[in-house]
Length: 115
Image 1: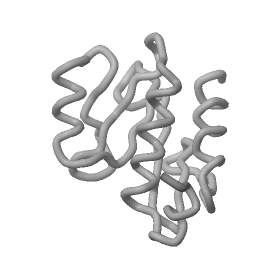
Image 2: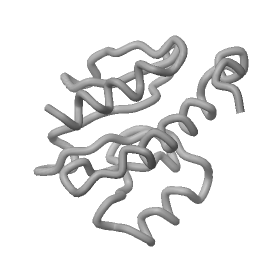
Image 3: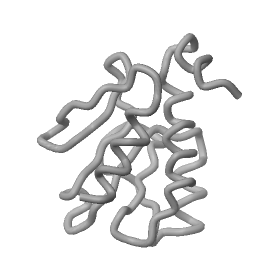
C-alpha cells in the first residue's frame, strides 16, 4: 500500500483534487477531469499510474527508460504511464503529476500553485 498512499498524498495536495474510483481502482480528478489513475491490474501483473503529459513526453520517457515508463491502456493521447513496482523517484513523480495538473486544471486553480 505504500505506493498508493504516497500517490494519494501527492494528488490530494493539489487544489480541489478529489479521489474517486475508476473501474474499481483509485483515481484523482480536478473538477471532473481525470488527473491520475492508479492500477494494480493494467498492464497485467504490474502496478502503476498514468496521467496527462505534454506532447512528445510519453515517447521520450518510454524511449529513455522503458523499464519505468509505458504507454497506458486508458487515458488520452500522450498520457504517460509510470510503473510503481520498480525503484521509484517520488520527486520526479511529483513533477509529472504537477505538470499534468497544469495541463488540465482551470487557470484559476493553476495560479494557486505559483511558479
